[in-house]
Length: 324
Ligand code: HEM
Image (cartoon, rainbow, N blue to C red):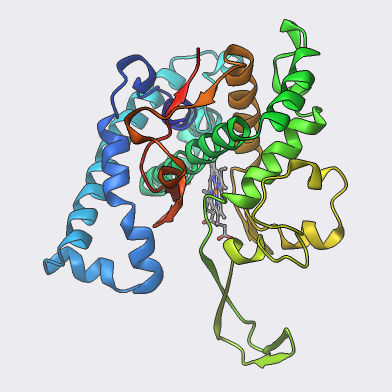
């Protein structure tokens, strides 16, 4: 997932798959990820931590600065590649069209005092996409593979659906039509949402009634996927991984799902993430139909207990699968 983020966002893979090592940018991103939580709980802590040593928060700020610098270098290289490419043959990245457009508009915008997108804005967005789009998708795919391996009947049904695919049909155009695969993805997102904690919202100035309570305007309210997705009135036997419940979801189920957030502000990468999950799951189970959860090195369900810091991740920081 890190390599996909690198290619799509910064125009270059991080080479994690080839090297088997975490890239520096990804390591620094993870080191800086507690900032998301820190900013949520104490929004003013980051500016203070820049000047006064506040242990892990100050270290996280330093890591985030390094991420910015490295991302900027990679984006500069990518910009050069885009600018030397033919307009009808741009590299497939999120920023390629934007860089190409900037180049075309450059003389006019410089004349008019500069209409170009701010460099800092571009880097901030790039870092935001990588930070939000890498661990989330990687951890969700990990939970999907683990959950399917744990349920032989689910695996069998999924394999039956995949067996019907020809080699030419292994693209997302075909995969998005697979009904059981999409039920498996949905159920994984329900039980193991990558963002399981509270998402903050501000009540409009005129106030609002929420669940029978009057809440004054300006109040910060929040709701979280973890408990919404486990409401037994909406999801019977909520702790059971049961993809079939999504065959004909009720309006209440749809309303309660907030794996991507809820309301006017939601995840910007939903379609990309769904595509990655479908392709990742299909290629994995076609290559390793007999994959099973390993018991070597003491690997057990306890390793997969969701740990929720910035994103939901397996508590044991590993998921050992045997593919023979
Ligand atoms: C399974 C994978 C993913 C899950 C479960 C997920 C979930 C979420 C959630 C719950 C939010 C918070 C929305 C809110 O505040 O209401 C969010 C925000 C965001 N996501 Fe995702 N996400 C995933 C993958 C991705 C990918 C692949 C990208 C893009 C490359 C991405 C980009 C973003 C961005 C940029 C935001 C911030 C939006 C904002 O600030 O308004 N996400 N995501």
